[in-house]
Image 1 (cartoon, helix red, strand yellow):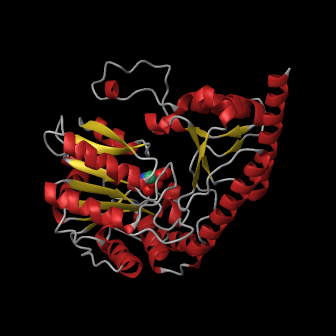
Image 2 (cartoon, helix red, strand yellow; image 1 turned 180 degrees about the vertical axis):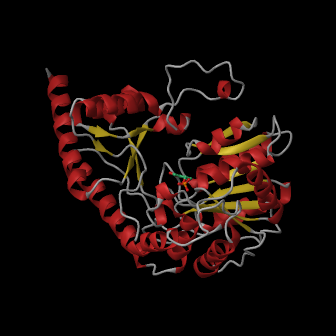
Length: 405
Ligand SMILES: Cc1ncc(COP(=O)(O)O)c(C=O)c1O
């Protein structure tokens, strides 16, 4: 979401609905400091730093040299790729999905989610989305003309209670409810009873569920479930998006899936057939190799994130900043240290960058309920995480000295 905030774009109908990007201010400062030659330890952007597994790269290189792979590909994904996704759901969740009409490949899960919002939304439709949340969950629908009702969601329990409360007060149910666990930005998981209840609500009140499962494989305790462990996709109007970006460190490859209810998949397939020709075929073939090939690379990546999480929690804790340990995702969701709470998340993020050389994302960028927190992505190595904690410690000591003077 890079925007050039200097150029006026407000005359455009859809752009008017998009506020300036909250992270832009912090990103601008980061760019300035880097241009001045300063090293910034960057926990700001959830961009995986780990390499893509070698067998996936090899498959890409092998395929790109074959004849007939350079033309337009299939918008909904080649058959083999949809079949590989179906095998993943069977193996990982014990869920049977028909690759023919219950699975579509997307160019990253972001593209699939955004185009689904376009496909199913009429102006004025109400959507319940978690707050805080990955910005696409609200803005994908806002761009499509919908009205978003943000529901506080620091935890899954809070979100469920908020959804029930909103339903009790509403004249009519929303068109759709977004769920996203493991959550970006909070790293929270939802337990099985959460899914049972949300599915029961959706069925009873005819509400579409959009489940964003981008972090299906980045977990440190129990593995997160699929929504389809709790309902047959034809019994509930639900769709789930998954991604290869974090699972196989393939963020730049742009490969994901939307799976589930046939009517929803058909709607997304129709919209996409007008908009794209699918990902480059060699990328789709390499994505099959990722899904069907050896999975120890997934376990290795998970262990790297786990160690980074532990180092972050331990070293920042020793520096005097208590950060709760996330159960899943590649993010820590850190309440502002009490002595800086008055600054708010944007000013605190700027202070941290200027005085400690550490970049974090202000929580308010994920929704108004994210104020009072910052998000730290586990995309720096252990040594740099420790260095960041030492810098933070010096900053805190200096602030104490200044306060005492
Ligand atoms: C919750 C969530 N959903 C979707 C995405 C987008 O992922 P993809 O690379 O598959 O488009 C992200 C990326 O950070 C995310 O955090």
